[in-house]
Image 1 (cartoon, rainbow, N blue to C red):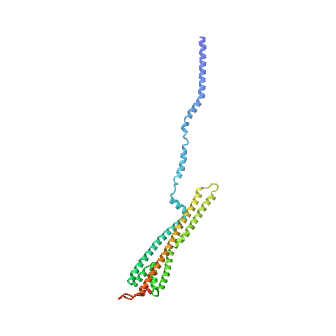
Image 2: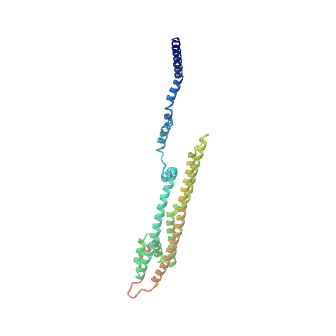
Image 3: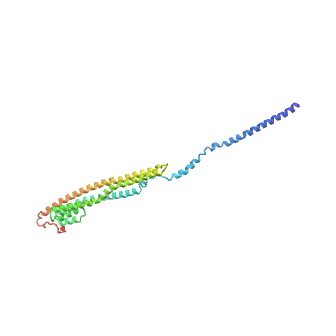
Length: 292
């Protein structure tokens, strides 16, 4: 009994000690367990950088409206008011070129038709009809023939001198129509140089006012403006000079050919006036309206 009674308290003490030890272990391990439970959601929080696209979204929305301009719109914006002047001169240049082509073609066709008609009237010795025809013809050949036939009453030499004077005057008249082509040819590079200076001033002013931070786009814009306006000015000048030289040579050729054709025709008229008329025909004589 004594062993039994002695053993029971000892067992109780051992049991209490084990319980106390277990409580101490649970108290020491419980914070770690809670820490581990709290740390388990950490992997789920790894995608935290996801808001970065949200921050980039406003920037993307701000850059979205900035669309690149087409080549035509870029040229218009870069050229500015100087480009508008070059455009106006270009339209005038095209108008003069087309009008001069039509005028010279009309003069060449009139020369052929009038001389053919006068040849027919000369064969029929209708000098009054011939004079009336050339008097109503408002062209180089018409004016030169009118002057020659008017002076034919004095002599053939006087008629030829009159033809030369009128031919020179008509040549000057046609040259005045193309004189603006020479002006445009000389003015184009000057306007382009003005655009060059404007663009370079824009670039260097951007460099001067940029301080420590230089904006390349502002410098590049000024340089592109200078180059574009220079190109436009030269692009207008080159064809203007070419067409001025082309039309000038063509006018001189037309004037010389018309004068030679009129001189030859007046010689035949002079011969016809000296020839005896056919039997029963009225004597050949220039109409009195020629002297008026």
